[in-house]
Amino acid sequence: MPTSNTASAQQPMLYPEIFKSLERIRWNSADDIPWDSFNPALLTDEQALTIKMNAITEWAALPATEMFLRDNVNDSDFSAFMSVWFYEEQKHALVLMEYLHRFRPDLAPTPAELHAVRFSFDPAPALETLMMHFCGEIRLNHWYRCAMEWHTEPVIRQIYQLISRDEARHGGAYLQYMKRALLNLGDQARSAFAKVGVLMASSGRSGKPLHPTNLHVNKTLYPEDTIQSKLPNPDWLEHWLDQQIRFDQAWESKVVTVILHNLSSLFGETFDSVRDLNRYRKQIGTTVAR
Image (cartoon, rainbow, N blue to C red; front, side, top):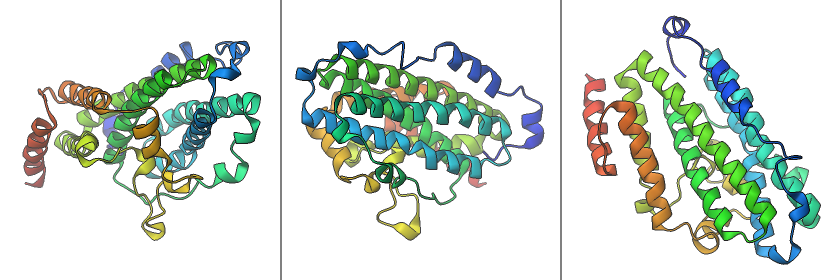
């Protein structure tokens, strides 16, 4: 994140307290998942295949972490937080894979399928990337909550509940770094966050589920430069959302509401709609351009 080293040095590091807060409520796959409650009659082939795709997508935290560390080389506080974020995201991939190894080993991702999602992302503005991942955590929290309702097998329902809560907590951690960026960079940070906020909150109108895993990140690989394009079925995400878990307009509205609520609190404004946020974006953009 392009924060001033002097300004950051005058503020307490965020990472130690974030680490403690996440450590206190961390779940354990051996103790907190009722593996013995598995009911094979309640897991369909269709459902099991979506678990595989989610596992591979979660594995993509690997190239995302490499991107964050590269683009935040001057911010040791945020880079240290990546150790926790990376650990927990990879843990999501592992628990989904463990579920498949236990109950549907024929669908467990292969090493080649996992490695396929590891490729270089082009450098991007750190503030915009931070906001994009904040919105991504909010969206993923809601996707997994919706998936939990769609699934019928009790063990995978518990897994989706646990990882959805993790995604919400990760969003809260990103928000703390966004607050710090506002203190250090003021309107520059507001402009970046508002711009990406408008983009990410407009998914419903664009007809595309915007998330870091389906955005283009490497010009030399275009158009096969999204995480989703590297999956065994590149069209899986839209099918999962539209035809399987049925992530409809009611769910999408929840995502938009949370994004607007957090930005309202962050900026000290009131955004009742994406239009309100877009109006603010234009206003701040004019100020930054002067």
